[in-house]
Length: 246
Image (cartoon, rainbow, N blue to C red; front, side, top):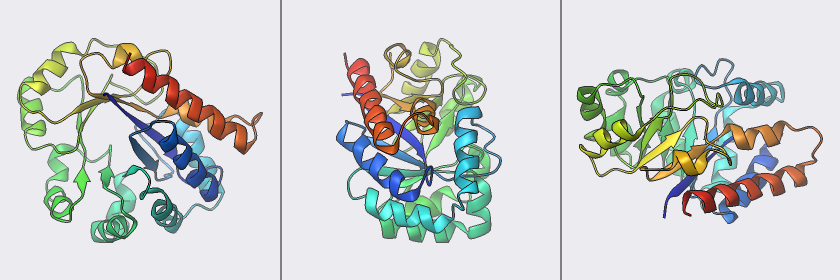
């Protein structure tokens, strides 16, 4: 069974909504939830997730909101925090580790922390029983892939194309997937540009997909009330889960 990882932005439109949406996604078949930490300069994200980040910050999002929401969500679904390195650096990795363990969160996804720069932190995170997810890009050489994935745990985040989330580009990933699987048995999940229309194709040869912008677009839709938004993202999750396992 291929896995579905769903991203939503914490605190948008509210922290209570985040909890309700997360639990609905869990019921709809999502295997792992990425709780996004709103940040003012989300360099890997496209305009959809960037807009949600900005609105959450305008709504006075604080890290404590992430910690509180996670304590209500993590008992019901495998949960990871997705955020940029700046908050980890300023608040301290030890603080995030302690809060993650308290809430039952299983690790971190930090897209602007390259493999080399992650090395001082990865052992600390893993020794605490958490995961620091490794990224592979289509531009990585076979040698670099081997260096990154040999000790990767939980799953490998394969970026579907060079660029930002939600751009909807397409690249043939079969060679890079074969290279990854030549080095490790760790599951490979593909992210960037995955939605209801692309999920079946993107899931070929990998163990799961990561979907963000398709959900966040719904959260940004001001023609829907909160109940309708939750119903819609649950429908999208069910549809994608069926397509990748068809």
